[in-house]
Amino acid sequence: MTYAILGSGAIGTALARRFVAKGIDIAIANTKGLESLAGLVRELGSNVTPVTASEVLQADVVILAVPFDAVQNAVKDVEWDSRIVVDATNAVDLPAFTPRDLKGRLSTEIVADAVPGARVVKAFNTLQAATLGADPAVLGGRRVLFVSGDDPSARLAVVGLVERLGFAAVDLGGIAEGGRAQQFDGGVSGKEFVQLG
Ligand SMILES: NC(=O)c1ccc[n+]([C@@H]2O[C@H](COP(=O)([O-])OP(=O)(O)OC[C@H]3O[C@@H](n4cnc5c(N)ncnc54)[C@H](OP(=O)(O)O)[C@@H]3O)[C@@H](O)[C@H]2O)c1
Picture (spheres, rainbow, N blue to C red):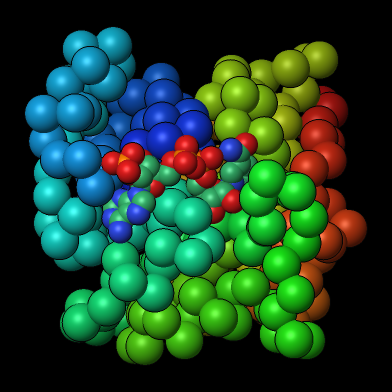
């Protein structure tokens, strides 16, 4: 299974840090290009491979860590062949930091429309980047990450990845329920939970 992150900003870097901490190879891309990622590789080591955005989009599991408004353009014209796309974005208006008015739609439904043929899972979007990038082992337990998606096998694959990265995964089911809870104006957004024991 190959993993790749589109976006090397706060969330992309935080996630790359967790992959490296567990010795899992991760490819990463941004818009500025390969040279701009040299510092990240120097810091995190050889588990991180800078690639082009189009190479990222060929991984078995593609994690979208770009601004919500950038998704449509960033993923166009890709043949997904049932590969997994993990939506780590939040539909937020900046700098107000208020939820985007999506006219009754869920943010992950809109992301899913942009990646036809992919199996979309929502994850990695509920914690602040600094928290996501930190060691998830806290208070004698593990920090919780939520996972939702309409394809059960894709959802389970991401649950497995979340656990492999050292977090406690909570499966929230389909996008209609779980995605709603996870999105920026949802019940678990921005909240930190720890599974003890
Ligand atoms: N920051 C948080 O604490 C946080 C928490 C939860 C969720 N989120 C969500 O996570 C997503 C990323 O947030 P962030 O804070 O990491 O943003 P960020 O620091 O601004 O980083 C965005 C990254 O996306 C890249 N990018 C933009 N358009 C791209 C494209 N077309 N192709 C490839 N890369 C592209 C940028 O590349 P360049 O730098 O080369 O332009 C940059 O590396 C957003 O949807 C945000 O709402 C953020």
